[in-house]
Length: 299
Image 1 (cartoon, helix red, strand yellow):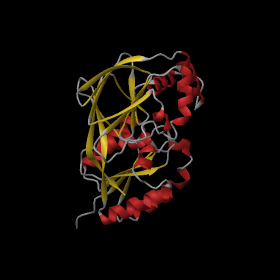
Image 2 (spheres, rainbow, N blue to C red):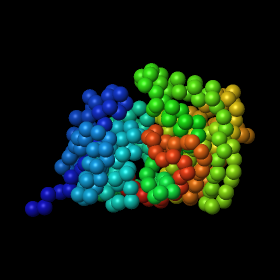
Image 3 (cartoon, rainbow, N blue to C red):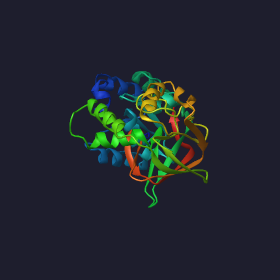
Image 4 (cartoon, helix red, strand yellow):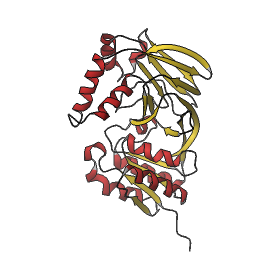
């Protein structure tokens, strides 16, 4: 008798600062209602997690489920992108932007139950991803937003800092970069059409938000086969005033904030490392391509 294909589950116990750990056993119970054997991937490092996800996909898993925030989802997407293995997301992190944008229930147990039902019914929805490539051919996938401006610079500074610990590190990094704020010179190509511009803010979205609900690219739709771009060259006081508006996406109404849409976006600039789904990615220059139906979402 052939054993049914298993459901591989990647759990990040550190996601959301551990506040969802108490519901993890119940999440696994819900997923088991799919009728598939459950294999919990238990890596000790980020590299091990990546390898475990790829191995599960290569072994023909019935699905790969990420239990955590956008960082956990990002790891899993590297393995399932462009394959036939379905993907499920259980939002249990500080930021759950990909799950929110793709219609996943916000409550972890409800999300797990929806995944189990989808597995039983063999039901999936096609969702686009963005593929980022360096000039040397290194490739990464992302689901939500690529930051290549002020927010990327803040992340890079915060990741170099050893003090203070926790969220205050980002507050300090934001303050330092605001003091040092200056526009960068970019070359931006949208489906081959070149624009040379100065900007302090530049983001490319497959989904509308990052950072736990910051709708930096509010018009982005992960099912339209396109990428949405937002860029702006504003001074320090204007940037500070615009920041609160990003939670509603109304910053794009400002006359100095520009939007565009393209299937392929190329970005060049000096001294900037991009961040995707909140994770450190590639230094500029990069090529970003919208890949329609890159994953099959269990929903």
